Image (cartoon, rainbow, N blue to C red):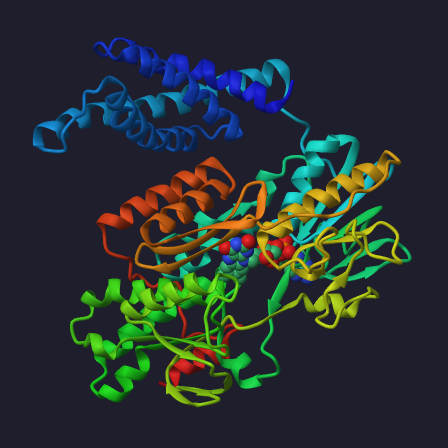
Length: 574
Ligand SMILES: Cc1cc2nc3c(=O)[nH]c(=O)nc-3n(C[C@H](O)[C@H](O)[C@H](O)COP(=O)(O)OP(=O)(O)OC[C@H]3O[C@@H](n4cnc5c(N)ncnc54)[C@H](O)[C@@H]3O)c2cc1C
């Protein structure tokens, strides 16, 4: 039986058992009972059972009670019955009982679901066979990279081919990073684990290998991994998909590379957050106003989406934690965005980009447009038209395809990206495919180069998966074509810009700005975040953020000896 149908059925069963007490709660018990069954079924379908994890299951499902309460008891039922409850002291008492009821329902649902799932497993066997190590008689598909493209390719292949092939995914991190929300981690709105999706548990039939790819032997069809470990150093393939992403490109600026923070990985976001707090701590005990200003100046290079979103998030974060530092003066705080062109956000229309610039200026972000970053020294950032005294520099101004590509015998373009044909196969190589930020993909209809975004990487992954299936069934491959769905950018303080392509009229787009665009941004990205549990965590974090100040606890030691020793030196030299 399909695992989603099986889980949905068990969830409906658990939902009806856990929801039975609701039938006896006054006159509105019946609609709530129906909601309990639907919620149980949907929850179970989305969350795979984890054997023996009773406490986790109960806690996670109890947390689900809060959004169900909000949607059902606060919004839907009062609207449908025309019986609105006021948010005054009396009304609050009326809201409280259903809230407790739904949380108890959730906890009960989690417990019952765990029991019925385990009984079903004993009676009918596991949902799907656990990922077995690759065996030589199955076609071996190896995916390199566990980002958007790699994970989506594995999910599509699992869906299409199941256990008829051996799928392996190699990645140097064991989780998919949801980059659109990375700025929120740097700005302390979200916890790092909220935006990371574990690859092992998300891909049930894929053999996950945590390791760094160091080479590929195309003759022998072997992937070479670093180190030794239990996985061995080599992995054989029949089809290989390159999804290794991109790295920061410092355009030959050695000092900038040594001193600036990257903004690409989860660790980068964690470091930036902790560094900002460290700067506030140092500034708070500093008596020299010049050094205080230098400590509280945060320079971000690059006016694309990543740079603008980070500037907005850091500006909000800095203003949010400011009241905790009593010795500081708000005039000393400055987030500066440096961009080499005369307008930010080249990906958006001119009017929306101008709107973003104006809104950010109103919130205190400073801009140095038409200026290039040329050098950096501890405490000093040098631009083509002047200097800025700052202890913090973040680089988002350039990326390049994964440098490993250049070391392999693969066709590349001038940037070092793997060139592919219209079916995303690598010309001149047998059963080698490439996608995402490490590939130079051209749209087969528009003949335009595809941008390095998650939106495109996901669709390219689907095309490659279909083409591998076609190759296995000796059918013709399809060409890659996808039109962007639009672009979204948060500029801070509940403000965003959105440009969405009109469905079926790709030449036209709808533009939104302000609070509405911010809601659209949050709605779209939370819906795209993989996994129900993470969606709930993010929604809860965003809700809590409305009522409580941001966290200023430092979670990592920055002054120590680590891979970023030079970056830590900036702080020590302050
Ligand atoms: C801050 C930020 C915000 C962004 N916001 C958006 C957005 O809002 N919308 C959007 O569409 N796009 C956005 N992007 C772009 C998007 O993240 C990328 O286009 C997308 O991740 C590309 O997917 P990919 O699979 O090609 O590479 P990635 O997602 O980067 O995945 C590459 C994977 O390969 C692994 N890897 C690398 N080298 C090795 C090795 N040698 N061995 C093993 N594994 C390796 C990495 O760990 C990683 O798991 C953003 C990017 C950033 C940095």
